[in-house]
Image (cartoon, rainbow over all chains, first blue to last red; front, side):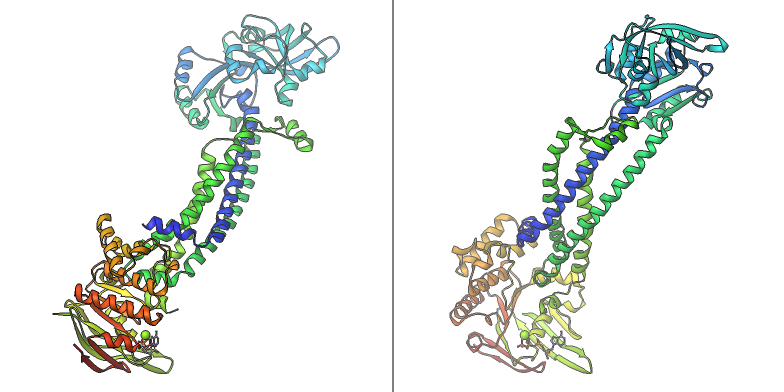
Length: 405
Length: 228
Ligand SMILES: Nc1ncnc2c1ncn2[C@@H]1O[C@H](COP(=O)(O)OP(=O)(O)OP(=O)(O)O)[C@@H](O)[C@H]1O
Ligand SMILES: [Mg+2]
């Protein structure tokens, strides 16, 4: 009956209820869309940089990050690999040897990063098939290389051409080799595209005379698992005296800072939005209370407990909010999903800016449930806070005074 | 047996420079089944008196005993419970709950008391029939005339089987035929259910139906007449 009374009370002033519901709807709708866009954009940025190449967590030999030198390489045993693999949320472990080389053909030369990879493991992280523009993928025993598209463009090289690499090998050994190009890849990131060359792990280890040694152990995670927690667990499995365990935030702090700063701006806008809506809801609750003081006086006179009256007012407020939130969910969800599967494509200056920073100029909206749930919850919380007003008024209400007005 | 006893109740209102004695040492008893009219000129203290014995207002001085229990000692939450179980109220301006139908209004107090659905249904129908509104049970107050609304209010007041019913000028907003109709119903309920009614009024036709007439003036009892 209390619920029935509350529900009917909501519709006593239809126009006001509609306006309030509309305001709540717009707030929820905008908040969900904004957050889906922002978080989706960040996720895409992280995916571009982290998910597609550096991985969420990496293990290096101590000192490697400061001095990326083949002498700071390490060996990793099967038992360590197995124990890392068993950590919950770890989806893939990739061994890499990375080293800087001076490359040249007959006419030009250029500094490049050579990465020795295990093609099969690497493919679980990076969608090589989709990114390969020309040629074929590596095989584990081959002696050929795949160059990123910027490198191919620099040398004006095609599949079948060769590049010469000169570098420093392990413990002062000479590292020299000539490698035919068997493929060209688009790393979807200008920096990587201008610097990257790939060969099989084995031929990279041969090149630097460091059999069985690697420089980076890349650990990829399953979606929704927290990389910091995984990194903590990894640390417990290895000798942290001689190894560094780094998350992507530590490896690319600029990206993390960029996201944090942008995110703070977004949250500020949403806080302002919620404050406006909060006052809107409060205004309605205030009127709902003030115009019915006489009625409250009657109800208390005939024996209605004040607590029950408060509950009715809370129900009324929640109904108003709930309808608005629900409509907000129902309308925003298909839109969010549409832009999740059909990302917004940016163009013009914004697109150029993103691209030059190494990101794809697209925004796939984030469509996880927690976004609408969080924002629905916040609005309901705000409306509950506004209920403090009628609760105070009712608790102080003297029935004959209220009825004498 | 006395349902209500007041012992020297006074109510003082302090206003700016002067003191108003709305009730001045009123000592009076009411017995089960009485049908009492409280009369007197405007400002004589009728409303103040009804509010005092109804636990809506506390007298400045004196005791109000309902079934030998002094209600002036109760706090405001205890008074709400006390009113819920002991008193039926009928107001001058009906004061039905606007969003509830006639039947739901009658059920409302029983619901507050935690009566079962079947019990509420039965009693509400019985009372609406008694006040002649069986046909209108699903109407909301704004679809009923003033007289009909007041009859619903009487049914509501009776629903919880209170010890007595207080009505402050219940017919003041009604035309003469609605007044007559309401009085018929009230006096029949008074006879059939032995329900105690105490009402204030200015209306001579209402006074004529009472079996006890108390006249107030300046907060004092001027006369107290039994007319059987
Ligand atoms: N809240 C109040 N503050 C100050 N004085 C009050 C208050 N309520 C009532 N009074 C005074 O107390 C006296 C009694 O008022 P009360 O309302 O009981 O009279 P009444 O007999 O019901 O009058 P009426 O027939 O006009 O309804 C009046 O003089 C009135 O002005
Ligand atoms: Mg009065």
